[in-house]
Length: 109
Image (tube, rainbow, N blue to C red):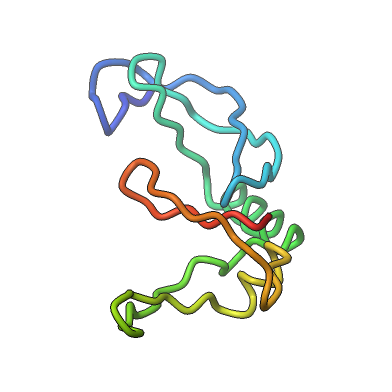
C-alpha cells in the first residue's frame, strides 16, 4: 500500500469521494483516501471524468481573474458574463454582498 503523501501518517485506502465545484455537486468518484487527514487522490481517468462532469454541468472555467477598479469613492468588480449567466444575475436587479471567510460573496435576490 501507498503511504499518504500529505500527512505521511497512514496508508491510502480505496473509497469514493463526492466532488463539487463552485457549490455544484459533480457526483461520487473512486479515489484513494487517507484515513488520517482525509485527503483524497484520483487517477488520471477519474480526473478526466470529474472534468467532463464539470463541463456538462456548466461550471468548468467559471473561475476567472478580474481587476478591482475605482468608481467614485467605491471599489468595483466586473462580473464576467458567463458567471452572471450561471448565477442568473440581471442588470438593474439587487444583489446582496457580504464577506465570508476572507471571501466576497455576491448573492442574487
